[in-house]
Length: 243
Ligand code: AMP
Image 1 (cartoon, helix red, strand yellow):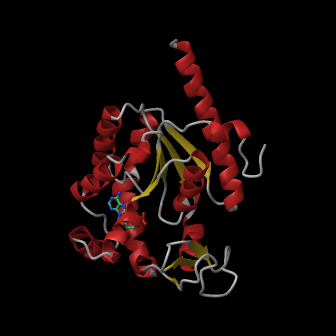
Image 2 (cartoon, rainbow, N blue to C red; image 1 turned 135 degrees about the vertical axis):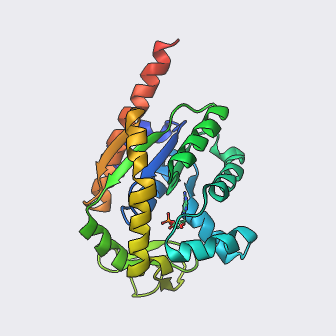
């Protein structure tokens, strides 16, 4: 095993599929998605980051999404889908892609399936990161984001070297407006009502894996690496069986 919990073989293996991180806000999807994307050299596609970027650039999409995000609601499916489709048209996702915060509704999942089929990918692998409500509240209360590069810290569990300052680029750390307690409650409600039904949707397709997300970042990364390596081996055996 290498230091990041994966085997050397896994590092050279291609992902060749869409990996979806699923779970409530604050579960650690972004942190883990970034690590997996780096390990497999595929794009990390966070629809939340894409919307925040559109807002920062004051594009038409950003202006449409901002009031919705500020309330803690979900952006309408058609806006999400055209943004994702455009992003996926870039050749860098040919070897696979890691989604974080997408899909968030059953219609988004259905449209994604059609896109993946057109791109020649099989079914996605979906990893549900399970975290209890108290842990989520604690994490969100402590979450801070670099205003320059979006790097995530937690003032309780993963603080920066100097308070309020990003270790990587010296940017100031801010609390996301939608991490304020009253907005966060709305986001949790949106998750329960609109996103949680996807769990059943993917379970019925036999593509849902579950990880306990309440431990340390390293522990969750290790559990994920094991799931991914097993899934990659199964996919390889499936391909060999069809030779
Ligand atoms: P996140 O950074 O994933 O927590 O997303 C922040 C906010 O962006 C969400 O609360 C939604 O308002 C919006 N958003 C991000 N991804 C989606 C999506 N797939 N569908 C609808 N809204 C989204």
